[in-house]
Image (cartoon, rainbow over all chains, first blue to last red; front, side, top):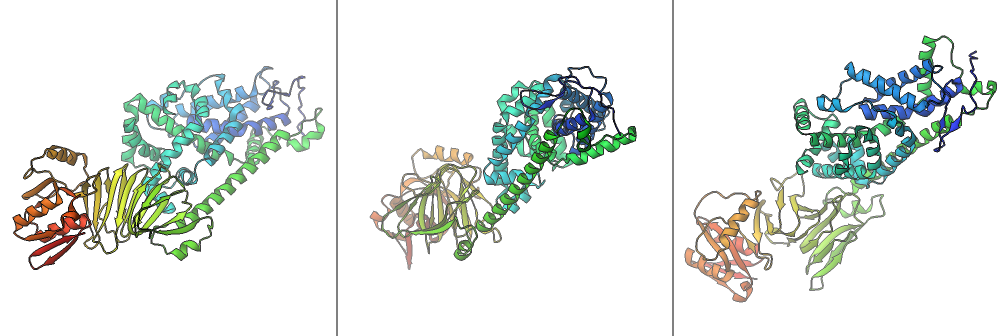
Amino acid sequence: MWNKCLPMSADHETKNETGEQQSNDLRLNDAVFEVIFRQYFIPLCAYCQYKFQFDHDLSKDTVQAALMKLWETRHTLSPGTSVKAYLYKIVINLSLDIIKHEKVKHDNSRAIQQKITAEGPGDGIMNSDFRQLSDAIDKAVAELPESMRMVFVLCRFEGLKYGEVASRLNISVKTVETQMSRALYKLRRELSDYLVLFLIIYSFVNLFRYL
Amino acid sequence: MEHKQQFEHTLIRYILKQTSEKENITVLDWISADSENLLYYENLRNILSLIAVKKETESINLDFEWSRFRKSLEKADPAPIVPIEANMEENEFDMPDKSGVKFRKRNMMRAVMVAASLIVVMGLLFLYSQLNISGNRSLSKARSSKDNASVLITRKNNTGKPLEIKLQDGSEIILFDKAELQYKVPFTDIKRDIKVLTGEASFIVAGDVTRPFTVYSGDISTTALGTRFSIANIAGAKNIVVRLFEGKVVIKSNDSALEKLDRDFYLLPGNALVYDRFNYTATLVKFDTSTLALIIQDDNNSKSGTNKNDRASATTDEQPSIPKRAGGSWYMFNNQSLGRVFEQLGKMYKVEIVFNKADVSKLYFIGEFNKSDSIDAILEQITSLNNLKLFKQDQKFIISK
């Protein structure tokens, strides 16, 4: 039996304003670790995938590795450290390592690669807004007119080419293009807040122009 | 910005990994060429990525991932982590796995909801696609569809006067006397289709870029996005004529299996398409927006003295889609009244052309034709374009309304 239950400090389980569980004391009880795992795994994957443009499996591997690192170092963390921030830091470092060692087939452009840099605690925003973002995305996609949504879904998720979408929906390729553009335009507008939030780490304030 | 928008679909395909090696190189060159391009690309990629990421990560099975984690832990450290449920009793503090379970449940619920809604959406769209296959479908098929929210309406105008019809989307139709139309109420989500069975109608199409407005008339279909145009599909007449007043339309073959038009025609305001339904030919011409008389395109100067010539040639350049005529010597009439045109033609070809001045009084003609054209052909063209009748009696041509 794993009985290494280390004493938790009095405020081991404080909830922040958003009601999320955050442990300020990192001398974790193992039970707490599983909670943390389940709480942060998905947002971390999303973050990894989105920011570093990793594919789905690679981001899962990376997050697994990050959580492993957290587990290994959990006793060494000073009290008052945010688990969330720490986890993100690990994910960033691991991801950058992967990119550096070119273990990833990235966008081949240098220009694009150079843009990906590590940033500080600002990344923590992702988790606190993840559920909000998730809902916002669902809403934005659901609010697309049916035809636009169908075109978007077929292109983006079923990987159909424009021609295939056109014959599937019995419309012209031109219409598919139009619908796709319109869908992206609408989604961009609806999700501009989140896009901007995410991209704040890139300091791309210019992007307001495109939204 | 236009430059980027043209490229947008290539970029989209690049992001979706549907591009060829060659295209990849083009895209990367474009991206590296300008920092604005890079930003544009990233913006596009981000929005596509954001939604994809969200959907993909939703499908993550936390139980699986947790057990995977535990397995790797076991390899590193032989003592396993006790699963939270079993551990609960032994803890000094009560740590219910609320958030974990909730998260899991919420995750699954959301996944189920997304899957369910996608299925519903696909089902609906499948139904719609069955309904909206082009106008050749018979009435009964349309009626027997499961989508009983949509009714097929046939309107015929027997009032002797033009009839105004207002559609649900804000579009307006002016149905001329004896004309007949068919359309669904309401229009579907992805298109607005109307069939002009016979006669002539004018359309003012309310702008809706998500739903093209298509009018089917015989062999051809005219699609508009926010536009004013008219279609004349008169039974027995040689030609189907589409005139464009405002906006933009594209005219295609109605039945893609038997392509009667060898290409699509894009009309700009002031243009008309004359489709000869017996010879299966289509000609782009201009028309006078006040008199509605059709004009055959010209680029030569000759008989007449007015200055419309420059304008006419200038506009030829603006309309790249107008087919170029082979060389030849041409006659040109420049905004002559049709009566005078007939008089002159009669003299040129030494034939007698009889017409009623009243019939042709309001019709003017700007156009040219090849000297080698037969007078029969020329008169036939002019009269059919202007909805006049032509009779030939020996060497006499009789033109009437």
